[in-house]
Figure (cartoon, one colour):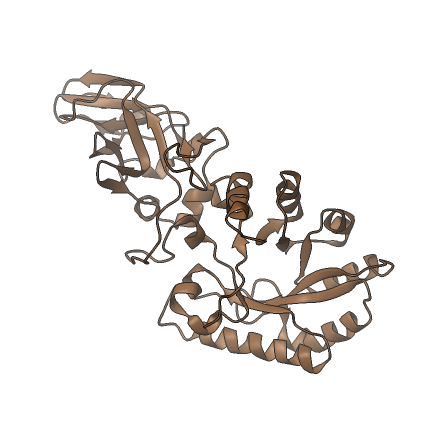
Length: 354
């Protein structure tokens, strides 16, 4: 099977990894197609020298058109009224602006429904300032390998692309495959693929090991101080945790303002000297407390909130499970004051620290 073009999805600051750094690294490795959610995200990449196609997936309205054109960004057409607004705004362009047409094949969120495709075709025929260079859909259930929904959505996308071709409007690159579909639904690969989560080394499903995936990001801090507390001592806001023995409590300068969630209180662990130290008490805005009893931890010791230390690992899926959410939300929730630094030993696309 021939290689497909890859749209590297860098929206939401490259899923919390730092979009500019990730884009520059991927560019050096030969990537030349990227996808973002908003016009400003695409402009940010252009301003740091990122070349190639940048597809704006989710929000590109007529007032954005001058900036889209000035920075060479590719808008998505996802609504009949939005398409018409962009058609009017671009009508006098000496050269048409390329656009991808989004079809709603079952997500129910955005995109042109197939029953509206006839009207969209007529609008596109009368829009000299727009040129369709791609057609895509978002898959709703690709992370469920047994769901029949993905095959149905792919078939609807193929049907829509065929109707465009029959009407004399080339669909351009047809794409649907997100990370889960790249691994589990080869029929969804079509003309191009759009990996997001897997691009950062994280499997799109829990407890699934995908060959070749290695997380690009870790979140680390240092022990601020170690408190030696007797049994029966309440700690943290509300005293919601009480020591049941003489304890060593490590204080970490990271909290929910940094994306280390309050819901990790009593549910997550931090790695200290290669051992899992449970989070105790309430995670606060700037501080997290962990039970380091028996670990001989000292001030300044490296603490891994997400990542690997001496063979032990806290994964994004571990944190997502602890918080009752999904890895995407964990990564996108990393705060601005968490510095993004490349690991000096291997210069990866992303790295985290606090």
